[in-house]
Length: 209
Image (cartoon, rainbow, N blue to C red; front, side):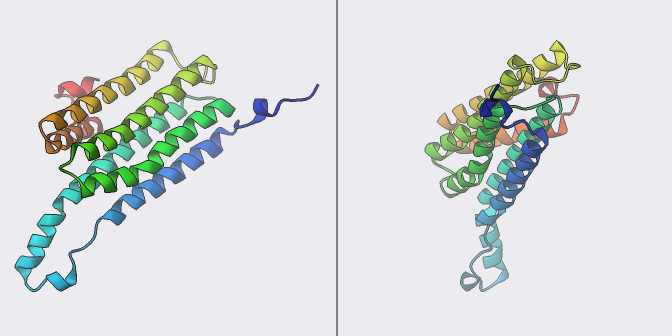
């Protein structure tokens, strides 16, 4: 009996993890290329250099936000993949679409860095985060439905993973809505949410989610 190609494609989970690490590494490196030192021709004194650094501050904040974004999604992806026992073609392609979102992050970062005060730029950036969350959630749900998870993965673990993704996306969406006030409020809220997920202090309410 002839084996159908789609049944044997995309089964190497280690190669998928290696590709993911490579894409994340490149995307995180490309983020910093949007930061440029002040033009030498415009610097004639220490005060000029300080003004140039102050003018650069918004892009540094955006760089920090995007680096944290990719760092959080990398940790999330690694957490999910360590509970997956095997891969298949459909799971591999869902993960490739997640990596597509990762590869877009340098562009959306550059875009909002240039137009930080514009709501369209903020919404485009949030759309990038939404794509990452949707594809990560979809890959996890598919892994559960296709029985790709390790046998020891309990219902509690599965629910915790899904809740984490959904709550994080809800917080990002709320942050995006704050652009109704202004984009700086949105950026500040998103960074606060990210710092909570990174530091996870027990005294904070958000640390429980």
